[in-house]
Image (cartoon, rainbow, N blue to C red):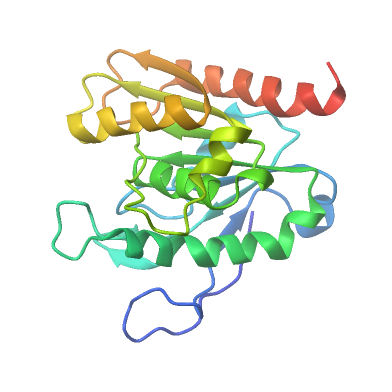
Length: 232
C-alpha cells in the first residue's frame, strides 16, 4: 500500500482550497491504469488505514483508495464537526468534500469507473460527493451511516441525481445507537427519492460492519460495476 498526497500546512486546522487529502492505495501507481476505482471514506476519529482491511472481502479487480479526513479528532480524524456540536453547519461538509472532488479530477481519467464507500460519517462524505457530481459516480456503498441535509446549498445537485438514479447500497442495524432516529428517517427518505436504493438490515452488528454485509457489498459491486462494464 502506498501513501500519497501529503496535506499542505493549515495552521487554522480548517479545510480550505489549499488542503490536499492523504490517500492510502491498495496497489502501486503503475498497476492502476484501466482499473475500476473504489474510494473509501472512514468514520469519526478513524483514519485512512481503518477501512483498508475490507479490501480482502471486495472484488479484486478494484483499485482501492482510502482518504484521510482533514481534522484531527481524538486518536484519528474527522471530516467535519458532529451534527450535535455547536460548530456544525453544511458549509463545513462542503469544505471537506470540495478538495476530495478536486483530487478525484486529478486521477479519475486513469480508471474505468469511480465508485464510493463510506462508513458512518464517511457515508455522509460519500453521499455528498455523489450529490455534487452524480454523472461521474457509478455507485455508492453506505455502511452504518447517513446523508446530510443540504439546506439549499448549491454544492448539492440533487435534482440531477434524482434523474440519474445512481445505485446506492445502504446497510445498517436497527439497533445501531450511534446514528439517531431522525438522521435515519431523513436518510431513508432522501435515498428513496434520489437513488436506486438497495437497503439491507442486519442484526447483532450495531455500529460496525459484518462479514455478511461485506458479502452483500461484494455482490453489489460485482453487479453494478463489473457486470455492467462487461455487458453481463
